[in-house]
Image 1 (tube, helix red, strand yellow):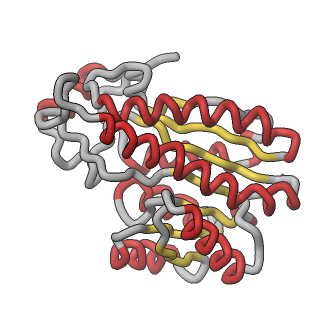
Image 2 (spheres, rainbow, N blue to C red):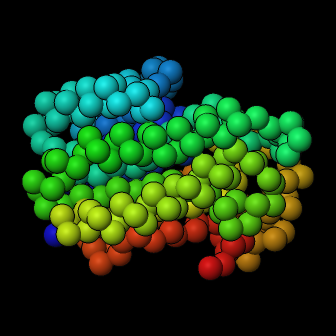
Image 3 (tube, rainbow, N blue to C red):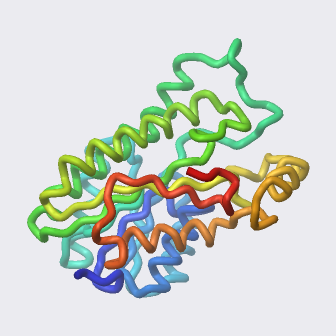
Length: 254
């Protein structure tokens, strides 16, 4: 069994919001953490600094395969070990703004393409870059970040919801193929989190509605969802793959 403290963990889009919370959660468990960022350089370096010497901030556009390969090379050289764990969290060009969202009659195919690239293309690049090292170790953890809006699209963010729905299929297919190599592939799906940069545009009334509709009578925080990702990286989840864990206080029950 490989403990979290012995893992090298890549968190994409970790300069802010949920990604920063996930990176810090793994740092708290003494993992070596790669804080990936695209544009949030200062914030990513602050996250890495808060974790300490076991973290490094690396810039890469995860939709660019060559940049992803270069990031893996830099990380493995820095830590002297292959990346063991990948958290596909990066959110590409999207804000949770229910009032100003594109509707069925105004959304463009290009909007769908953007979110499919952000969800599937990015996850494909990191999975392929990690595969050789994970297979050599006979151990790997790939954890994709999804959304409960796939099961319950209370706000029909057409492009975002569709991209994350596709990510479920990606997760299950990869789990089936990579399992014999000791690599598990799972998904953690949150609801609207209170609060991240992406959800900052959400009116208080929406948060109040979620709170009232949730059995726990509160809105899930980034830190709570981050803790769930630790489970899929831990030895406790070693027999679990291809699963989608919804972390939203019971709003959606599968």
